[in-house]
Image (cartoon, rainbow, N blue to C red):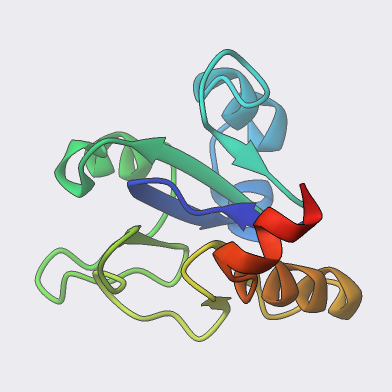
Length: 130
């Protein structure tokens, strides 16, 4: 299932973590407490790290572990940052969202459709479902 969008989100391609992050996916999960007592998540293609504000992410740490970031251009091909009520800090062609969920463009089409349907629910429909 695509990942839920929290107040501030750092979305990272799993393929970048697998190929570049020192220690790989297992070490990344350990470093960021994926599936722990927090809002950090993963699906088949993405990791999502959640914070309260977009300026709380430690990009220097990600760089020290091997991920790419162009400081002068304020951009990366490996990850991006998005606030719940704003746009991406820089646009990546591999991610999309409906302001409720975010997904990698190669995600399962049925799961994307389900995320879009959930994002289109109105309060009237939610009330009716209850």
